[in-house]
Amino acid sequence: MKTIFAAAALSLGAALCVPASAQAQTEYDANRIVADVDLAELRNLAAALGFEVLEANENQRPEVVLRSDSGRSFFLRGYVCKKNEGKAGCQGLLMFSRYNQPPGLTPSHVKKADDETVVVQVWINANDKVRVDRYLILDNGVTFGNLLENIKVFLASNQKAVTTMLDATKGS
Image (cartoon, rainbow, N blue to C red; front, top):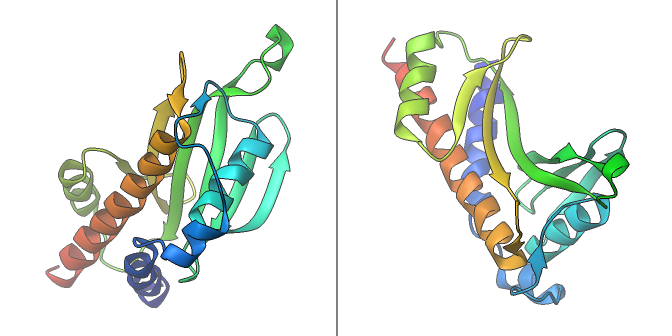
């Protein structure tokens, strides 16, 4: 399990820099206001970042699983979806990744990672998976460019959280 966690952590570093060639492949209006997200918008974000869509579904909440060129995977999921109220999409965006727990990981290691990466939440879910989350509220809209920057912040903070936890387990 430690190998899986370590491999995931190592692949995070390469994902932080989106290659210029990937950015150049997709034209987008960074100033376009996005007030809600649906599956098409999640796909637009993936394309603008040059990330591969591994899975996409639109049950009650639209969701995509993305993979960067480095092989790092994470999820984008719409939240606060009010289709029955005439809204086209969801007014919240959850970015998250999950990992198997490495041997020796304790609640204090997770708390340390959570405390040191304040722009994401680090926790262990009911299935004993380590989760790293960032949530963005889209009330009144944000620019498409801001959404892209938030995803980049999530990726960088995710890297820091994973590194903090891995370093902590080495000292245990």
